[in-house]
Length: 326
Image 1 (spheres, rainbow, N blue to C red):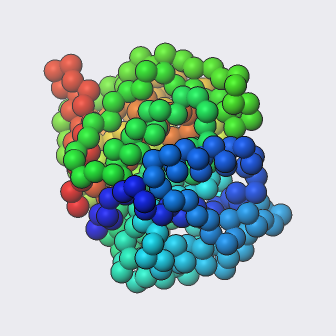
Image 2 (cartoon, helix red, strand yellow):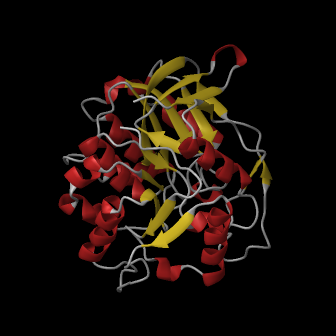
């Protein structure tokens, strides 16, 4: 179930299913709103986006109310998570999935929001979008790639390629917008060669694993699995988290794997990544591409969870194509 494409004049609702928007700077929020409004979109906010408790969230009931209100409002065409953090999986049991199924809308975010997105897809068939937060639109520099990819994913029906950005950055841009460090992007990294087609399933690896053994975990059968993690993950945690995912009964249906670029503090180097993947017998013969533009470095591509994709690393190719097909 692919939601309607976003058009100028459409309303974008900002909600905070995880961490409260109260932690964000006013100038960053103003830039984000102004940037979206320049494309003709109307930006509105859930009633409880800035409330917070000692865990930097608001209550489950308040966050659910904002989620349900956004889906119930016919004027709202796109729902952007304010930011990630923790706690979005607290909502899953009490979501009105029939409401979502009857009112499909674009839902975009990443990191902790992965748990919510995969649940919505599995329970209703709604294609959701792993992509920028609302707060991401408040980035002054180095955001053009993310912006272009977001618009490509949510405003048209054509297939599109995910290609390497010219540069990348892992600095805490929200703390200092003017002193940024950008690194040359030398392209994606082929870990294992091959061709594959499948349905895009994935997001933040730690958040995916929160769903194991629950009624909210989508099948990995015939999937193109895309995974990433932040600097809290390191070599051994990434290894065991991936292994845990590969123990799922339908993991033998994984057709290909995309891995987002790691932050340097994770210690997940190219050499280490090759060793980890080569140790996974479950991925023998499966094409694997790393250093892809998604995850906790910038800029990021927008990837539709539930849509079909193809990857090809044969004969010098490095192609990742997304299709707006269910």
